[in-house]
Image (tube, rainbow, N blue to C red; front, side):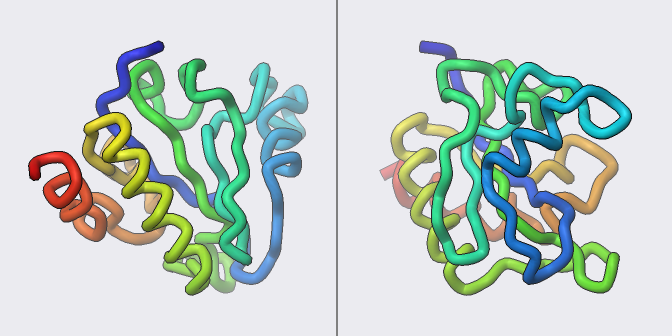
Length: 145
């Protein structure tokens, strides 16, 4: 088992209301450039669909391909959305927020680690909200007590 010390939240940077699944994202990541990234698998470990369905991506035992310099020891969690009229926005549905909270709570407890947004490690808007602040209490609630 690899050492995991953080969970990093992402968005797909797709328009609000446009539903995609893990196979769509896998195609985006694995198709050769210029259509995709040319990676061997989807970069995220989990994807949250608009209806709150949690889909597994890359195996947790494998480092992700989601945050430069942080992949070796992190889990990548992504929700579908992040754009409103082409601009970064918190587009999470009520169902996505609920599923994301449950998944992050379980992962932070299981791996005893803190939660960050991609924006905490890169000059990006992703995940279009401040995940580090929003989920700071999960680590304290579940790991420190």
